[in-house]
Length: 228
Ligand SMILES: [Fe+2]
Ligand SMILES: [Fe+2]
Image (cartoon, rainbow, N blue to C red; front, side):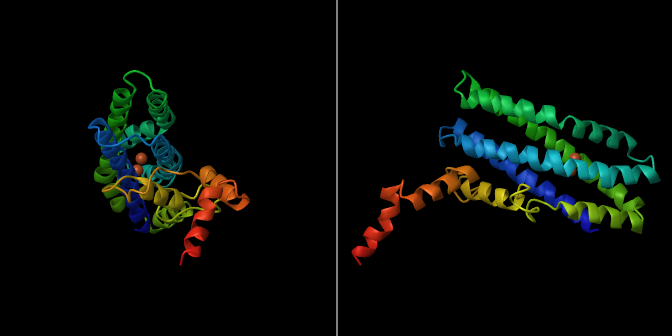
């Protein structure tokens, strides 16, 4: 049943990011928070790169297709979920377009982004609910030992965001991305360490410190030490 644990963990990670974005939208709308577009963009990218591109294909391949071999139970739900998986690109494009409008200062950009994101969040709530209340019980009922072995191998191959993925140079390291999103998100949903810095920003900053381009920042620790 390791596959079920993995799938539920992945749903929780997805729900956490969605909750974080919803919270930030609420706080921005109330005037309590300045938008951190880098962080919002990174979160939307995460929603595309992990759930849309990795999680759903695993469900198609290791849950739905195996289940369909044994039963027609849940056929309508599977058909609907497969259709929703296939529409992933359009879903993310709509969200990215709304984000772009908002970030470029379009009139009503914030309201349109908030509406687009609420729509996205509502979609995911229903999608995951259907998987967890209809599909997972059927999987438990019909899967054979061979099915479990195949599903577990498939799900582990690209484990959840908490577990990370292969080489950071060749694949995105979702564990690292997830941790960084949490660290940058405002409290109480995150650790409040924002603004968000992506890999490129951090590498450029490290280089600048090493070459002395950020002299003031680089020298500060030394100046402190001199006074000790
Ligand atoms: Fe799904
Ligand atoms: Fe799912």
